[in-house]
Image: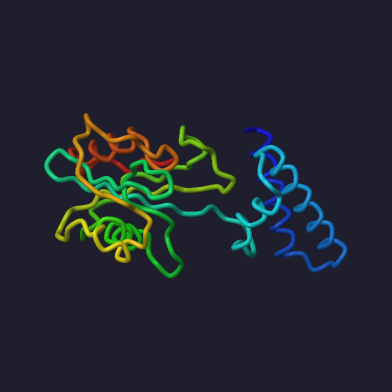
Length: 210
């Protein structure tokens, strides 16, 4: 992972150089540097080069981390989980924040889209750098994960109408913390749920970071 992290950094430097350099010769060098980094990343990750390039296509300008929001929604002593269509494993509802959308609004939207429930954000519990925690498998992108404690205000599971959840989740339900379903470890760790529950019991606790 040290090599992969270094290559991602080299690629990010190349992208920043393409964004800000004016000299055509420097631009050519930054393009070449980025290409070399992508080819080496592909070898280390055992992916086609085209797949690696596709992961970075949306990026323009100075490279910044992607933002993943996750919502902790509790009912009594149980937590809301959704089953991901991608791997049939379970996670806290959430996903990528959209542009022109605040992080808390993204959390509310993701809960509604993935589970049918309506929530109100109560608190930002944590901002975690994904690469510093045991999420698996590792991702090529650098990701910040924002965890919000939310209050359930209404709604119900609506997977029976698949178009209402966009096909991203196939089930939702409330689970006791001692009896969690198999977790999608790239999205949610058991420690994330315990962290959210601890802040639910102690709402004045400071927000965690990194």
